Image (cartoon, rainbow, N blue to C red; front, top):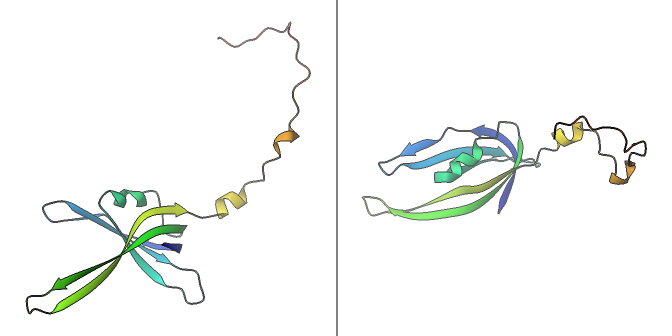
Length: 124
């Protein structure tokens, strides 16, 4: 599954317990009629995937839905869901839109004014 939208918040990596479990949360705001603020958690080595991203970027996040069951001390069963990210891609087209288009490959002509008698100044 995938979630696409604009990064609203990137939290710092947090470490829990003696085993060093790491978690980092990301909030993505979807761009639809009724925008949703989706909190996605990245765990363990996946927390590093967020290092190069910033608030405001448009991204596509690949996710897995996770669910678990927990029985509290009173014997009541509770259920919890989480959204875990495992890949993130920048889909910002604004950077590419600012650059001029590349000319087609056949627009370049080979040089014809070369003289084999000219000496090469390159040191190798």
